[in-house]
Amino acid sequence: MITSSRFKKFAGINKNKITKVNPTINIKNTQDNIMPTHIKLNSPSLKATQSCNEHSYNIERSINTDIKNLPTSPSVISFCIYRIITCKNRSKPPHPFLQYLLYKYPQTEKGVSDLMVFPFIKYKSGAIKTIAKSTTKKLTNQDLTIKGFIENGEQLFLFFDLQEKESIPIQTVNYKNRDKQLWWAMIDEICNSREVINFPIHHSVYKIFYYNPALIYLMNKEKRLPIPKVGYYGNYYKFIPIIAAIGSQNSIRGQLSNSDLFYFSTFRKAVRYATWSPLYKERIAYNKKVTDIDGKYNEGGVVRFALFIEKILVPKDNSYEKLGKLLSKSSEWKERYDTLYFGSIDYDSTDLTINPEYILTHPEQYISLSYHMMDMKTITPNWEPSYNGYKIV
Image (tube, rainbow, N blue to C red; front, side, top):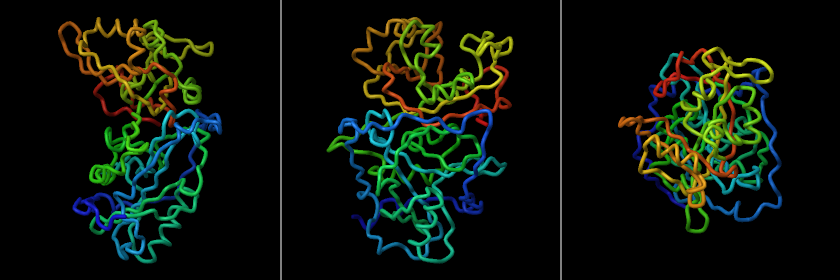
C-alpha cells in the first residue's frame, strides 16, 4: 500500500476545456445495417496451457489501497476501469495484456470533438463509494469495488478491476462506429500512439501512466510481459467481418510478393487498402464490380488488431530492392525473427518516410479488437500518406 503518489504534482485535466462539457454516460445503442454488430469468436480454451495465463499486475505500487482515506470532496471523479485479456477469457492471445475503458466525446466543433478520456463525473455531493458503485454499474453492468485511488489536486482517480470477482469471457468482436462512447484501449494506444483509430487521448489519461509506470506493465515473476502493438488492416467492406473473425490470412500484398506473411500498419496506411484496390485497378467481388475505374472501392473498412511481437527485424539497408528481397525470400529471416518492420524506403537515393508496417510471420501473433466502416466522404481523390482527415463512419 502507498499513501501518497508522485502523480499529485501533475496538473491533470484542464477544467476550462473538459468539465464544462456534459460527460453523459448513458450508452447509445446505434446500429449500422451495412455491417453485423458483432462477430462471434471461438470460446476460450479451457485446456489452455498455464503459461499463457501467468501474470501479475502490481498496481498497488502506484495507487493508495487504503479506502478509508478516500477524499471526501473532490471536484472531479475519474473511473479507471481495466481488464486483463488472457487465454482463459479470450481465444488465441499468446500472453496476457491490459486494456482500460475510455469515454469518447461525440463529434462536435468544440475543442473536445472525438476526445477520449477516462469516464468521469463532476462531484456535487454524496458518498464516494455509493457514487462509484452506481456509476461503474452503468458503465459495465457489473458490481465493482474500488481497488484503490490516486489523488491529483481536486481530481480523484478511482481504479477498478472488471474481472476481480470472475473472469468474464470475451466471445465477440464488435463493430464500432464513431458514435460509440465506450472503448477498450490497449496500453500501446494510451502511452505510445496516444490515440485509438485517430481519436486523440487526453493528456490526463496517458500522463497518469507516465508518472506511475507500475500501471503500465503486467509481470510474469520478475519479467515484464511484452505489450502488444496496435495494428490495422484495410480491405473491401464485405471482407471485413470475415477478417475480424478469423484473421487477415495471407493478404493480397503477401500474395503479390509470393510470401506467406501478414501485413498490418497504421490506420492511415490501412485506409489505403480499405478504399483502393492493391494495384489501383478495377476489382470484382461477389460477382460484381466493387470499384470505379481507378480502383476506388464504393465502401471500405478496417479491422483493429493487437499484434504480439517479440523478435523484430529492422533492416539497416532500407533500399527498395533490399526490402523487396526480404519480402520475397522470407524463409531467410523467419527462423530468427517473427516480425519485419518497415519505417522508410530509400527509392532512387530519396528517403521516403512511410506509415510504418509490421509484417508478421505467424497467425498466432495477432487478435482482432474491433472493426469499422470507412466514411467515404472523408476519402481524398488520391491516397495521401500524411493526411489526418480520414474518418470511420
